[in-house]
Amino acid sequence: MTDSNTSIVRAFLAAAAAGDRLAMARLAAPDLVVIEAESLPYAGRHVGLDAFLALVARVFGAWLDTRVAVERFIAEGD
Image (cartoon, rainbow, N blue to C red; front, side, top):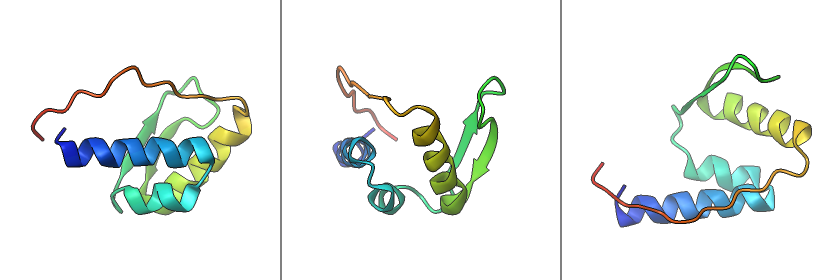
């Protein structure tokens, strides 16, 4: 992860904490793929920005008190 990528991750997490789904979408790759465990209520492959935004809505709806605490970022080559 380069410093530039670290900045993107920080911005993405800040947008997530603020519930800013549009900012999250701007920071994500248009062809992103999220794979969620089968044990979760939103299990499966979520491909593309529309699927990602739908997933985010489901996650924030299911886990209203979700918080993310990052202890440190480690940047390495891509």
